[in-house]
Image 1 (tube, rainbow, N blue to C red):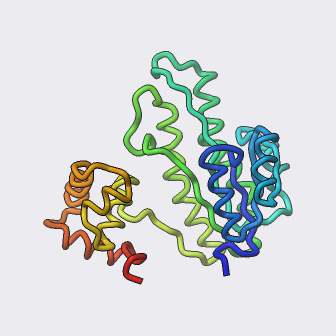
Image 2: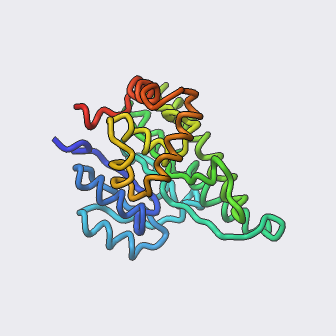
Image 3: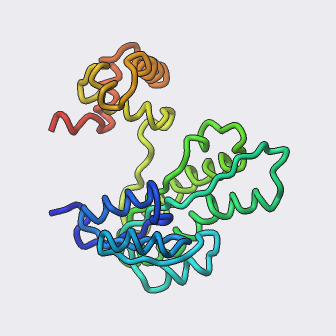
Length: 245
C-alpha cells in the first residue's frame, strides 16, 4: 500500500518548482492533492497531471485561504511551501516591502496552518510540513526580513507540532540534531548508513574535500571524537536505517 493512500493533502505554492515536485510525489504515493497557488493556471496544470484539485489563493490573504481550504474541509497533510523573497539591504527596504515579505513567508504559514488545523483536530490526525530556508538559521546578506520570517516559521512549526500532538496524540517530531545544517544532516544520514566519503560525494554530487569538511563540522557539532562515535549517535537517533534494513 502506498504511504498516503486515501489521504488528502494540500500544497501551497504548488504550481511551480519545489511545490509542484511535492505535489507529484504525494500523488505518486496515493494522496489526493489540492494544489493551492495564487496563479490558477499553473495550479490547474499541475493538478491536471496528477488528478488533483486546483484552488486559487494568495497565502497572504487569510480570508482567501480560509475560503479555499478551511471550514469543513479536512486534510491529513499540509505542506506550507509558498514563499517569496526580494533582495535588498535592510537599510533600503521599505515598510511596504517588509510587510509583503512577512505577509507571505510568515503570516501565510500561520493562515494556512490555522485553516487546516481544526479539521486535523476533529480527525485526531494530521501532518504539517513547512518548507523554510537556511537563512532562517544563519541569516543571509541582503535578505534580513526574509531570514527573520524563516526563523519565525522554523520555531513556529515546532510549536504547532506540540499543539497538534495534544489534540491528536501524534508525537511531535523534533528536528534531529538541530545544530546541524540540512546538508550536514544529509551527510550524517549517509555516514550512519556506513558509506564512505567517496560514496557520499557521488550521491550528493559534492567533492570529496567538501564531504570531509562536512564530516569534520559534524564531529565538532556533535561533540564526538571520531566517525565511529558519530555513527553511534546517529543510529541511536534513528538515522541510517535505510541501508541496514
